[in-house]
Image (tube, rainbow, N blue to C red; front, side, top):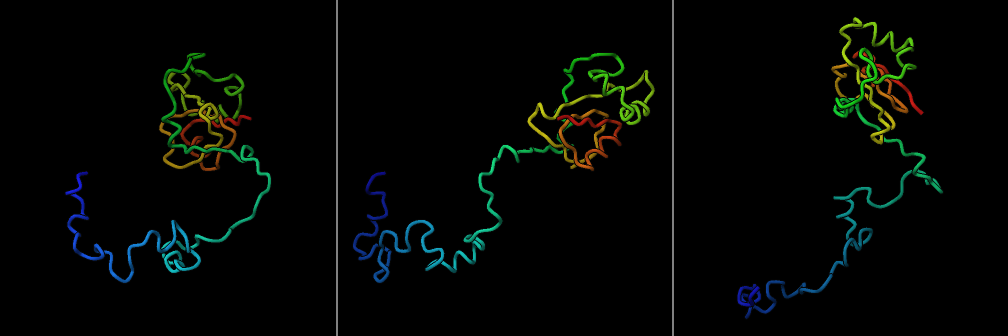
Amino acid sequence: MPTDKKKTRKRRGHVSCGHGRIGKHRKHPGGRGNAGGQHHHKILFDKYHPGYFGKTGMRKFNKKKSQSFFPAINLDKVSSMISKKTTVRNKVYPFFNKSIVGTDLFKKNLASNYKKENLPSPYQINISHYGFSKVLGKGKKPIFPFVIKAKNFSRIAEKKIIKSGGAVVLSS
């Protein structure tokens, strides 16, 4: 920026350049950064940042974060993850393991609701392939039936999946 455009050119002749005679324009009069949060800036911190200082909760020594890593996904997001490019194993029940199809739970939840001829192709999705471990029940129940494999389900998610005609499979 050229010198003639700077503010200091206008302020020439005015003794303290707009910074006052008494307070003076010094480098860091209140301290740098968050200095004085418990001392001379205490009122500001208490007013605008309550609870900024102090400790809460219990300490857990040698915490292994990998053991408590249990990412969850909501049910309304699951249906958008299903793709139609899945392989078909047989005409009536595509890509189901025989162990799933043979169970009473599957027959009761899915097969009893439809005639065998016009059974819509139920989708199967394994949530762990997408990096999730648990399915939560937020959102509307699925429009079409599908089987979800996951390590864990919430009660509401399980209810919604079964109501829509799908099935829940626990995987380890």
